[in-house]
Image 1 (tube, rainbow, N blue to C red):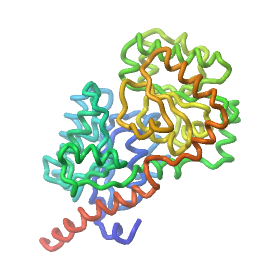
Image 2 (image 1 turned 120 degrees about the vertical axis):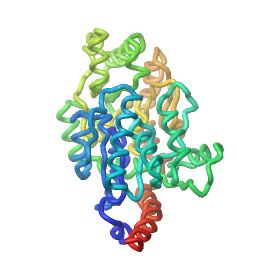
Image 3 (image 1 turned 135 degrees about the vertical axis):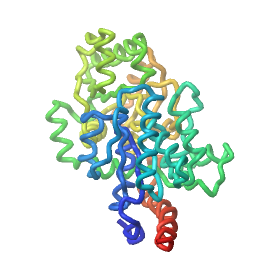
Image 4 (image 1 turned 120 degrees about the horizontal axis):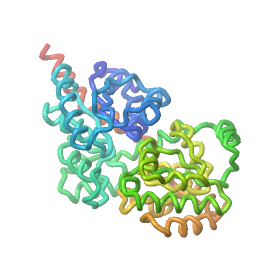
Length: 382
């Protein structure tokens, strides 16, 4: 922690989150904040496999946990989180609130800060898919509209915010904390080699897939199509690994699609380091995850994004391709795999569009600029 941050009061900065990706993205900022961070987890991802184990793995302090949020509909998640956060902020008002991205927890944290007139910092501001059917798009636009400090990860994100009329003084280009997260938590080569050997894998000779978004899992026909494409790829000679999200597993069981998993290597949800290790040496990633769209650029691996839209066009320039569910998944996968080792080596030499790995340092400095004057005023008032 920097000398400036060491002057901040203990637990004076409330960091509100609720999902595994938020834990990953905010971990570098929380480490920078040190004792001044007050971690509050809404429980949007409340189970141990998807969130609890990540707190320990990422070296984060034990969070304050909200009640009865996970597993409920979107409106209920936001409402219950907002009610409990308002009570917490009323009892122990933070000097600033930090949220990240576009989850229901992000929106609840932002609204709670706004209701109590607490300065709000939005990490990863300015992402836009221009897809009104995406709940996350509404969340991120609402949060950006009320944030006091908007941390734009890329020039494109900053341009989106300015085009919407947001005061340039509120927007800072910081880079994306995913770069630090990947660099810090990617296991060393020896451990990666041991993990691949444990799974019987050879570097650059397997496919790694993830699947969890409602647009791909909640409609039985769409889910069947995606699984069928993965199963067909597995018959081509390369193993297809699928760490199965609990939500996706439940949908597969409900739709009685388990037979499509027979040729796929199904894994339990992975820890972050495990996932990065497998992703670093895969021949191809296939995913609907937003975070994987960023992580692949740091790891230098190709990605097929199975979604109707993306809020991360920066990844599409060199690393990723956007496709809708259907035969194009297999066609594009085979095209990318045909590029072989030369294609992989080219990506490894291509810089990530998400910054230089100093985003958390810049964000922490912005938070300090908010909190120190407030702490000074409070000391004078006392």
